[in-house]
Image 1 (cartoon, one colour):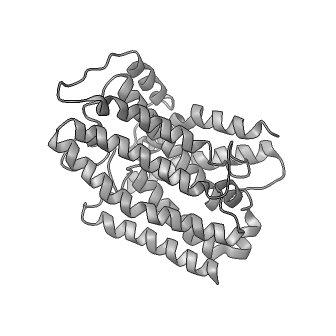
Image 2 (cartoon, helix red, strand yellow):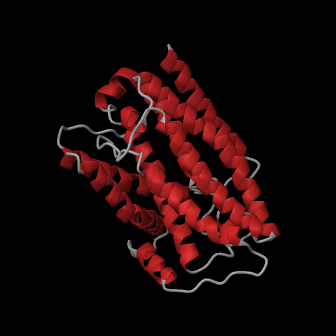
Amino acid sequence: MKALPVIHFVLGLLLAPFLFGVINRTKAFFAGRRGQPLLQMYYDLWKLVRKGAVYSETTTWVFRAGPVVSLAAVVLALLFVPAGRLPAVAAFGGDILLVAYLLALARFATMSAALDTGSSFEGMGASREAQFSAMAEPALLISLAALGRHVHAWSLSGIINPLGPEAWRGAGPVLALAAGAMAIVFLVENARIPVDDPNTHLELTMIHEVMVLDHGGPDFAAIQYGAALKLWLLGSLLVGIAAPVHTGSAVIDGAAFLGGMCALGVCVGAVESSMARLRLTRVPHLIAGAAALALLAAIMALR
């Protein structure tokens, strides 16, 4: 049983890029196309790792350190995230704050590298990233705090592991509101539609992708892999809250968790196929809605 958290952590490192394949194949299905292979991101990462990196003369060590620091912060944060009933590798009271700060560190490293290029486009993307993330972080923390108040625990493993079908029967409104807030935060933090379009090539409308235009080779591979891990990390929290499964068998619970992650990828692909990206002026309203849901969940948990 002690090896289960390590197995979950390793599976997260290995399967995170696969989630992008599920999303892309779902979008291709809605568009009537065959789409990319499910393992396409693995091929892309391998191709990027074998390439060389080119650095502008205007950049400093900040630009080179950005992808490394960002990836390291996300990997470290993944150590504290459980997979449904499977506990995390590490846990302590208040680790929800550490995970939030590690994600903020990863974001800060990416924005610093973008600003270090001296590009006005990348600076514009960093500014948007800072604005939207500053609004999304309170929704993330408040929703987790509401769940922590409900189960009387302040670590991610202590919050997610006890959840199950019986928790939904006893505190369905709190879990539903927290799950709704987490779903919006999931889309915002991962720069997915309706907040951002990861497949666009218009610099004036991009947020995350415009910040990494000057990265290439292994640096860009680290950024892409870090984005996949962040998608897996936040997706694990969302699946653990919205679709908790507890059968008493670690194998069945683990399989249910992986099925939930694949279902989440299908849902993201369906959302991106059925609606367009919001105008930038509308995005704060969406994030404010997530904060309102999280705050309402906290108020109900305090009753």
